[in-house]
Amino acid sequence: MSLIDNINKAFDHRIRLGIMSILMVNDYADFKILKELLGATDGNLASHTKALEKEEYIKVEKQFIGRKPNTRYSATPLGKAQFKKHINALEKLIGK
Image 1 (cartoon, helix red, strand yellow):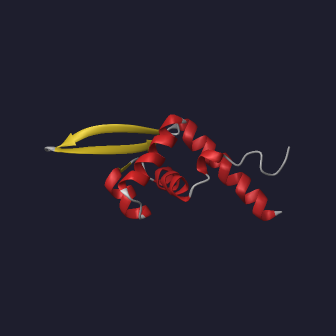
Image 2 (cartoon, one colour; image 1 turned 180 degrees about the horizontal axis):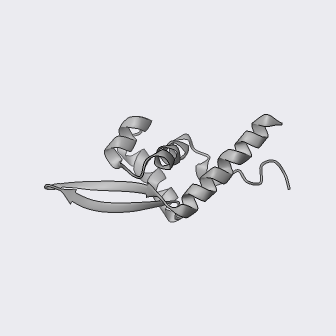
Image 3 (cartoon, helix red, strand yellow; image 1 turned 135 degrees about the vertical axis):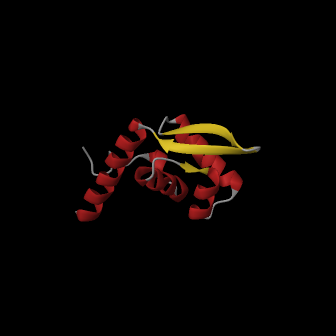
């Protein structure tokens, strides 16, 4: 087994890494908060959240707050496990 076997391609991009980092320490975050924290454009953030949702690493909930639509994201148990594995692999790589 090589050092990079557990490095997950789904987390390669800094925006995805940021999304997962935020969701690991918060129960959820909405689109606006993720956009502000990551300095991402709407389109960029939307494509990266879709990629993580497709892998079933995050869950998406759409709701209305008053009359405004609100999209909220949370990490799934699978997403949390895969992200921890990814971070551990990076730490081993850096530590060697």
